[in-house]
Length: 243
Image 1 (tube, helix red, strand yellow):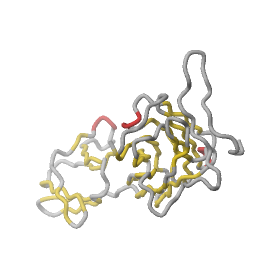
Image 2 (image 1 turned 180 degrees about the horizontal axis):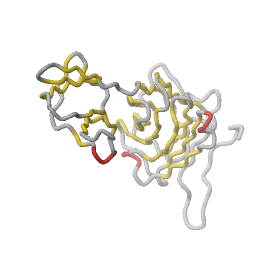
Image 3 (image 1 turned 60 degrees about the horizontal axis):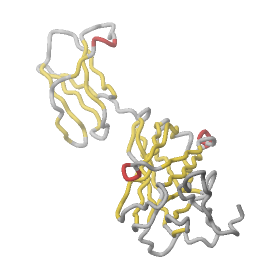
Image 4 (image 1 turned 30 degrees about the horizontal axis):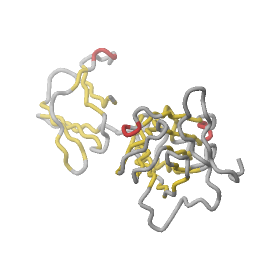
């Protein structure tokens, strides 16, 4: 636990277990001036209430078998939902420590099968799903609690790596703006609000089953999605619906 002994594999009844990730000591090379091996976070832009994935990408050098890391995040803005192995880590073993997720800390350990390594290149290794709870930028950063960060090869030897943090941009729920004229109505909302569809209803009680999508294709002008519709003698209601 103090990092004084070399990392070794534990044997099973019929075969050795996948490589474990050793905890790095304070002298372990986690950051260098220019390290080609990088572990970085790719964060999405979300609106309040929306769920999206923070991707953990590894710039692999061809000898990586396992990695471990902790993520620190603002629990007032992001709610942890789940974590899964990424596209490049099919068949791997992912262990997640979410006991401190309510306090904004999450630990992950990912290991390929014994004697396997990732091929060189940019690899998506883990996907962490969050729900946006409040507006504003939410920094997601690598840490060492509850799991020390590290990368190892198939012999459980530590590999140096740089760690690059990310930030989830959480936008407020979009507001629908309606401007009426004698002949038409114009409906607009922020173009950045992806995942929303414009719906209409003729039901004054606006029952959930009465809403149907507006078929007109929005145009984009001045960072706004705009739909123009002819004025109708029938009263209609409009809303933005998050898919």
